[in-house]
Structures are given as C-alpha cells and as structure tokens.
Amino acid sequence: MQIGNKISQLRKLSGMTQEQLAEKLHVSRQTISKWEAGTTMPDLESVATISRMFQVPLDDLMLEEEAPMEKTEEKITLEDLVKINLHNRNMMLLLTAGLLFLMISILSAVFIAALSYTTSSTQYMLYRYIAVGEYASAPVDYHQLLLPSIGSGVLGLLLCFCYLFKNRKRLY
Image (tube, rainbow, N blue to C red):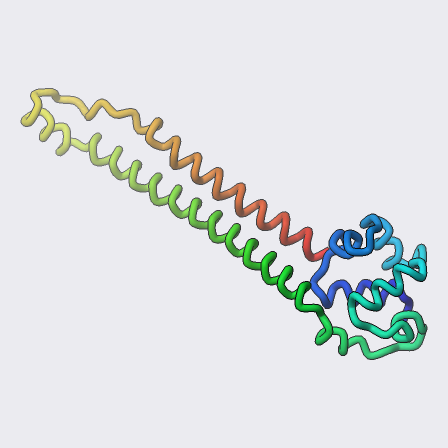
C-alpha cells in the first residue's frame, strides 16, 4: 500500500478531515489531497509528524508492504477524541435546533390557520353580531400573524441545511 493511501486511511479512521490534518501539519488541504492521490510525496518531516500523530511506526508508514492498519483505531489520541466528540455534539445541537424551529413554525402556522377559519365562520360572525353589534369577521390580518411563523421556519431550514452542509463536508 502506498503512503498516500495509508495517510488517507489513518486520517479517516481518526475522523479527521483533510483540512484538520493540514492544519496540524502546517500545510494546505491541497497538499494533503495530492499526498493521498499519490501525485506527490510528503517530506520526511511531515512523515515523522504523521507517524507521531497517529502513533504508527515509521516502518509501517513508509514500507510498501501491507501492514495491519487496524491497530491504529486504538491509537487515536485523547485530544482527537475530545475534538470529535465536541464536533458531534455541536452538530447534534445544530440539527435539534433546526428541527425544533421547523416544528414551532408548523405548529404556529396550523394554529393561525385554525384561528382564521374559526373567526371567519358563520357561527363566530353571528356571535360577534349578538355581542358587539357588527356582522363581520374580526378585523385581524392573519397574514401578518404568519410572519413570525415563516421566520422561524426559514431559520429552522437554514440550521438544517447548515447541518447537512457541514456533515457532508466532514465526510471528505
């Protein structure tokens, strides 16, 4: 297995993106992409840093023979696990907030539609005629009442799209 494939496999097993690995190695994301594609090779200093970071012996990383890469799953550092856990918690919070805003938007829109239907019904108009003396529906603009509902729906959709975009970006 080539070193680029090994770097890619180690990075994915640790749950890191190319950007995160590039940041730790002080190189660009494109450099990591070229290493993993096999178009360029990392310099010796980068290979040594990768070896220490993933706790893989240099021999396993540099030699072309197939080395058992399953051992690296257990050698993820505690710092990396904390970062992954924090990221996953933030992503779940983002998704939960988006779904909550969507639910609030839908429930408030249903409530306003029911209120609109009730106040425009014949029974309500008769009640209003008896109580107030006017034979018309209540002077309320229900479209303006829907604006906060629409706003929370848009906010919920934005949060859900943000979650999907960040989650898709993390897989690469």
